[in-house]
Image (cartoon, rainbow over all chains, first blue to last red; front, top):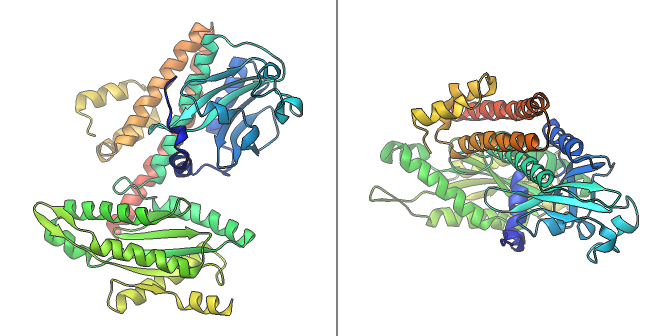
Length: 334
Length: 97
């Protein structure tokens, strides 16, 4: 069996997060694939299962009315550790699954066939799986069709990823960032998580472009994104919202910690040297930071506060992090 | 990655009568620099072709296979059009700024 990168769980989860599909509404494209699999394979249950930290979440499911299960009972968690499909003809006769609650209890799984959903960079983020409530076999040709359909699922996922990724820097696009941040803002408010937002703008970028050319400017943008990413955690994300303007969303953290993260990014950018056509180019960036913990009712409002703080950072000499006054007052009040 | 004109003709010929690919064709020069998008389109076709072949081996008739393949491509094409639109809008925004 070829070794997959699933043992590298952190990177696998990063790949899953990049897809930005968890907890999104059902989509016809995935439902069509699961319906076709159900029809061709003749199993009552078919699902697109994504394996998250501690759960499997179904992007599409036919024949069962659930949205997720704990990961530790998921057959698909075994499948993602393989490079080829996994087939269990009778779960009661398989010591790995004989006592599994999904086998001994509802829905009473007996047969399982799952094909890994393998991203182009080699991470198995989930499966396309077919389930029956009675023991059965599956032919090699049917299994090939399951694999074919799993590849189409990955095509759809990768296509969405292209739509959400800025082609120059690899950061999220403006639209993708706003969609994800608006969704996460509501979740943070509901569960009382902290959520902070930093807007960063590279100082005097136009003069860099004028002096060294757009190719040099593009390289600097790529390098800035790379150093910012090296500072951020898995749950944070970064989007390009303008030519040289980026937004960073920091989740489940307080204002003070976010201030430190922004300061680290600022220092990393300041010490970054981009070599282009024999020129060593250095840039700085200004940051505006705002926190959701204490004020604001939408991500747009949070962003407005961060924008105002960015304006203050530019106005006060650039190459600095400024925290919004409203956020600071809120933090003091709390 | 840049597609030369021969490769471009070949990749587009794989999807005759496809309005989604016509959208891509119109903007192809812009997207030639996006290797992920062109690779995705090409691989998707190959995956549909492989599926059609395996469904045929299972004894499914061509009419039904065509119906499934076209329906699957229709979904993909709709998403592809969104990608093209989003990227065009993003580039417009950045030019304005």
